[in-house]
Image 1 (cartoon, rainbow, N blue to C red):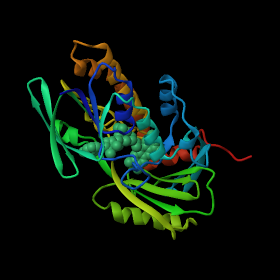
Image 2: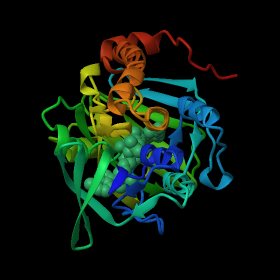
Image 3: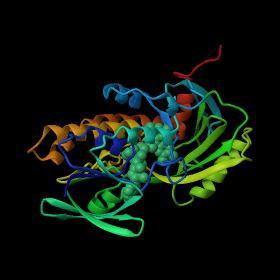
Image 4: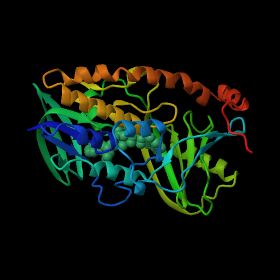
Length: 353
Ligand SMILES: Cc1cc2nc3c(=O)[nH]c(=O)nc-3n(C[C@H](O)[C@H](O)[C@H](O)COP(=O)(O)OP(=O)(O)OC[C@H]3O[C@@H](n4cnc5c(N)ncnc54)[C@H](O)[C@@H]3O)c2cc1C
């Protein structure tokens, strides 16, 4: 019998496991094992740590180890609008990271008193009075465990959310595809590409050591075709896609309204991207994972008798304003006419010396 079972050891789950009181009996479950860098172990990600995530680290009194960073550190985004053929550069303050090393570092900070089950998949859950029965599978062996509180930190395609709250409105789900290619040239910026014929979200090229990652968040219906179209358009701009290193796909959420973000209730709660939290404009999600897990850890540690779910939900309501502001900003990036006006004006863009 556990006090808390956390499903998912991404930034949200690892941060919660790290912060929750030592008085609690906690189990952290992940289908990954963090043993080595492999497609199985690596979360598909652009690997850019945004200022909001850096602020979260400052608030959590954490500094980032050097080995998590990768070359080059970049100070600008080149924005290409393929609909209007306008290109602009803007100043940016991201840190370029290796996502596997980042997740492993967060995982290693979890204290030893937390039980861990790796290579273990969450299958489903069932509420029984004030307990939750959690079904897990390790290799071919199924286990049922009981917990007072179940936390879904299992990302965009959360099985905890599906199992407990499938009827609650979900955010729009995109399929993101990312391919990594060898590159002789080191880009001094990352690239954000907008083209409404490819996606109503956006595509990117990010330099990492001697490679470039090209990715896009796409409609699930014709994702593969649209990704090929993107590559074709970038090839005509001089990109060389001949030496493929890896290819991966995963889901990414994009809440179009605040009611698609759901933190759960009673004794099954959701944090990070499982709740739908991620920037609908930039797809930055690490700061939201750190924020929601930190807030939940405070609620668990401070509220011995209260309904933790209710307190957590109330505290997270502060996010509504932030998300509303993101929704207001979105049309200027994703509506092709408004974007054209914004980019043509050169507002906030960097001008060469
Ligand atoms: C293509 C792409 C690019 C992105 N780029 C950036 C970026 O540059 N910067 C940024 O800040 N954000 C980026 N994001 C968003 C960011 O990756 C997520 O928002 C963030 O990882 C969410 O953290 P999380 O801990 O909630 O979930 P995740 O990091 O997704 O972690 C979920 C964990 O749950 C585990 N899990 C899932 N299902 C199960 C199961 N059934 N049983 C057991 N374990 C399970 C997974 O193995 C994983 O460890 C990107 C996302 C995508 C898809």
